[in-house]
Image (tube, rainbow, N blue to C red; front, side, top):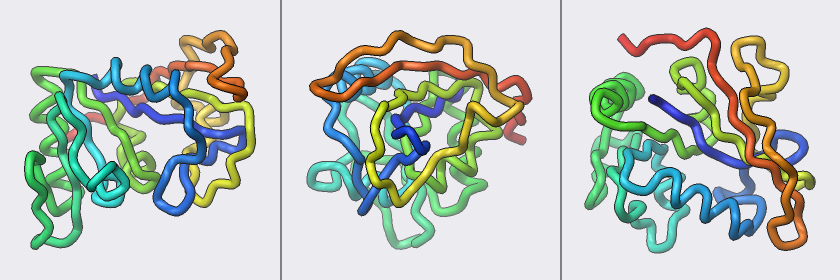
Length: 170
C-alpha cells in the first residue's frame, strides 16, 4: 500500500518555516512505530528539516531533489517526479510505502495513495503550508474517525481515509 502520513491543524495546516506546527510526543511515537521498517518518501526540504539533515533510521528513505547534484547518504536520491513515482511503485511491490512530506509531495502523490493516516490537531498552528481538505474530497472516505485524546495539552485524533478512486502509477 501507499500511505500518506501526517498531522494537520484545524485549517489543514501542516507546516511553517520548513518545520512542524506542534511538538506532539504521542503523534511522533505513532509516526515512528507506523513507519519503522518500511519505505518513507519525501521531498528534499523534508529531509533537510530532520536533525542534522539525516534520513530516518530503520527505514528505506527515498528523497526527491530537483537538483541532480544533490545525492544524500543512506537514501535513494531521485531527481524527477516520474523517477520518484517509479521508485514508489517498485518498493510498493514488497512493502508499505509512506509519503511523509512536504506539502508539494503530499499534493502531487495524493491521487496515488491507498490511504491517508491523518492526525487531526484541534488547534490553529498558524501554518504556511497546507494539506488537501480531505473531508471535502469526494475521492476519500473516512474509515476511522479515531477518538480524541490529549497529547500534552493539545487534543488530537488519529484518523484514516481510504482513497475510493486510486490512480495507478504507470
